[in-house]
Image 1 (cartoon, helix red, strand yellow):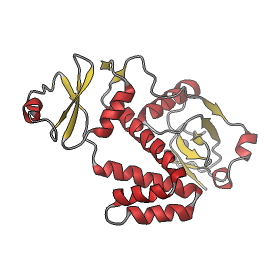
Image 2 (cartoon, helix red, strand yellow):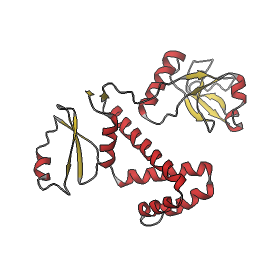
Image 3 (cartoon, rainbow, N blue to C red):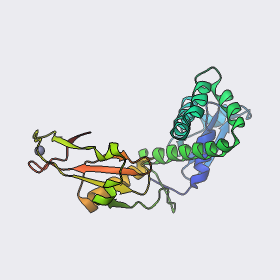
Image 4 (tube, rainbow, N blue to C red):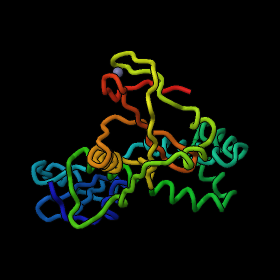
Length: 242
Ligand SMILES: [Zn+2]
């Protein structure tokens, strides 16, 4: 299904949609409408008049989803500053986590901006996943970057962190071959942060490199795709280990 809607407007609707504030896409007029039970007297009538064939319901955003975003943000802080993330971790595991999170964020203005960007990105990815799952295409809008995948040579693999350098194919899960199985590593220019990116990477890997089954790893800075094929039976179902 193709819809002519602005992605930013859709993200905003996703962000605001909750138990009492409902959002719909009017498929005939290509616009977003909202019904707010808290301020509209005739909200119930309006809701009853929504015809499901002409309107698409935008899913209600739950506090669980918002909580998850907070939690992910705390993990992200942990990658750079473990002590600081500990403080945030405590805060969101006590009562009134949303309120307390807001309060502690006020103490760290440099993180505040990061938080808003992080949250915005998460919502964008939620919307992209929803569009993907519902097979909806937004006309004239590019929602994911151009993806480049390249094969890494030995010099580049040498620069991997030790963990990843030691990671290799051990056995074929199909024929149990435990002999030499060669590995290939690819780098991508973006993280697999939503289903559209995942789909596009799958497509490129298949078209350009004839690979169907690959693993996803990371150098800490870059997403790495790992691939191996059994020389005996040709299976790509390979067990990797350190
Ligand atoms: Zn095999």
